[in-house]
Image (tube, rainbow, N blue to C red):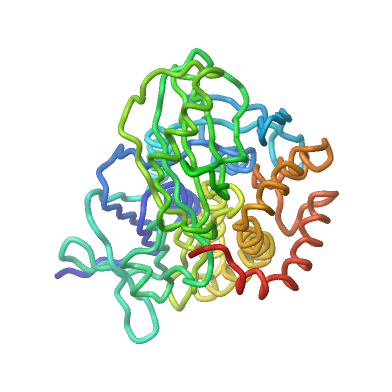
Length: 407
């Protein structure tokens, strides 16, 4: 075994890991990235980019010419449809995008390589733990030392288990499934989200179905659900997708599935996101919005933040990262997790989601939540409503958990 030393080692070459590598390498750090998959792998995903994600990509100077521009969100609840443009704010652009992950991930990791990061594909990296400190990784039969290891390995697995950073089993999580189909509406400038889903038995499902037009002749079609629903373990995602597909076939004129539908799990919590010598970012840190399953923007932001803090002071970076991520996101994500217990009850779900698009004022707040435009710094009505909701749900949370609908 040989010993090689780097400033930063990143486990995972997805958007979060690539963002950390780009920011670190551009700041002058020596960066090594490992990924178990080969270059150009297709990560199963909804492919939608919120205005927040586009803002982060702009900050990283990623050219979005290859992505399909999205100007707003079409929300459907029962027979009610409401179409809203993404808001123009001082923080984020007034547009999102759809960019299939194969191309998005390649653009990001190529930028990391151009910045000077070294990337090793098809190689699993595991942390080296010396006492209570992570000192590097072992990969491909070799040890690689680093001042800080950035865990960007996605949904919790062996790396998370080794670091005590697995999912909190008392908190909800999500599952989703997607495929692609041809459609003449592939250039539509709105994401479409059906908020009122039912399984084959007519049971209301806390989640939504989506149509994300890719601008390349196809649409990403999928459904997602939260673990708080009754009989969640019996939910058949393929049947749910087929049911949703039959619902949108007439309006989207979609053709047959272009590939076998693929499912994935959405982590929405973690027991730990930093320690001596390491931080977890993106999905590995549970940074997924429980109300829409989106996490690319949080992954990009957390990756950049981890690298920036490391460049300022490697010794204090992990603790400062955890504090700043907490201040930025914890309140909103906690509210989302509590809300997921609430809508796990079918009657509350049906009533609440119809209200969500019932008026312009409430729909605008829903738009902010679905677009990941709300956090601790959000001004105006959306920020105030989420603050009130956080306090109200904090009181109701013990009852919600005791009476949770999940089997």
